[in-house]
Length: 129
Image (cartoon, rainbow, N blue to C red):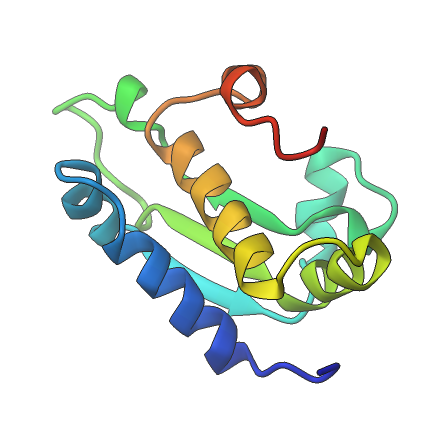
């Protein structure tokens, strides 16, 4: 299993969203979800990431904890899932099911939407240990 389609990634991501408890599920449904093969160069540059395999997902938007009723959205909040970097990590790790890794990336990015920092997520998500 080496050439997994973007449609498979999107299907796993949507199932993951539907598996969230309410009210998180309702809030997550309001975020645009995009699956791309690779992150765009400007995304990597903005984050200071040199290796394009180093970015498996990205949340773009204003976290719910920072939104105001006065904010005028310029674009919808969006979660990006990057297929090739996830596949590369999955192959390198060899110890996790691909769908579990996809779901993990999805949950991590939606946690940012809900206002969690990487440090907050790391305190409760021991995925990398």
